Amino acid sequence: MSAVDFWLKNSPAAKQFEASEELERAEARFGLNRRDFMQITATVVAAMGLPSTAMGAVANAMTQSKRPSVIWLQFQECTGCTESLLRSEHPTLDKLILDLISLDYHETLAAAAGHQAEAARLQAMADNKGKYILVVEGAIPMKDNGIYCKIGGKTAIDLARECAADAAAVIAIGSCSSWGGMPSTSPNPTGASSLATALGKPVVTIPGCPPNPYNFLSTVVHFLTFGALPELDAKGRPKFAYGRLIHENCERRAHFDAGRFATQFGDEGHRAGHCLYKLGCKGPETWANCPTILFGDCGPGAWPVGTGHPCIGCTEQGIGFQKPIHALAELKTVTPPTQFARPGEPQGQGVTASTAGVAAVLGGLAVGAGIKLANNLGKKDEAPGSDSHNAK
Ligand code: FSX
Ligand code: SF4
Ligand code: F3S
Image (cartoon, rainbow, N blue to C red; front, side, top):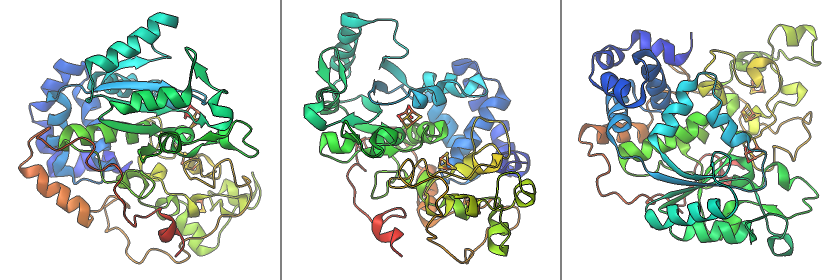
């Protein structure tokens, strides 16, 4: 049983939520049945590290708030970010995302082409000046003045800068946009770079190749619920999603601690589900919530290590597409965590100091109340995942 199913079955807050009017509103607004909406809400709440009692407030924000305008640009990438968002196992997640935001410009989804598409982008920017969220998918080639990626005669550098100028918040989605990703692999002939490099200022990053759609959805829902972006680490990543090493929450961790490893694909250890460290798993040096949030809404085991493949560190700058797949990971934590989750409490979901603070805010929540959207942008801290933290 997944952590979320456990919650839905056992938590008194879930029982209370089941009887709430939010479920009726969700049916009316999104056409989602009660069970699907409960499942998605619980997953988002768990992803954000909030207690189960937050389900009502989060659902309220999802069903009641105004849809923020989103302008979505695509540069050097494979469209995997968009695909992962829109082709989820159950059509409910993409439907919810498209209903929660007003996707006013998106090249893959637009019916318009050429000059019409250009005009649509300019119109959307003018109509929502200073209020829209800019999402950028793909790396930006900086070499030779950016001539390796042009759309409508403009370089990706110029387009990104033009659209970021009047945005309320800027989100780099996927590893390409977050830190260069696959297009920046050595020898990087086009000078593929991150969005932050092209803009010369920090942005929110949601790395992954592709990123988990729940991390994007949860970031948007956090904004709708609290009127502000979530707390970020030094690399611009929401801490709720990238605050723990994969190795900390991996279901194979007990095998690592006991020294039981697969040493070849298909050997006895591999078939028995042992740790994939010796096959090059990068979980010990990759910060992401893959083992707890999973992919595709298809139950336990639906993530790279769960299917028997070592993590390649696709979210992590300097690891994914840089370090050879079968090279051994650097161990950031060698000993088991000192504090394990209590029985019945999924690892990584416990209430932390910051979560408790957020939960306290929930009581007197006024959705969208005057908190500036970009409050957290550019904040500096010594978050997990920062270089100084990694150097421990
Ligand atoms: Fe692809 Fe996105 Fe990877 Fe990059 O995801 S899945 S190459 S992160 O920009 O489209
Ligand atoms: Fe899991 Fe990989 Fe860590 Fe082994 S090395 S416990 S497979 S994350
Ligand atoms: Fe990527 Fe590793 Fe997660 S390969 S999807 S960071 S398990």
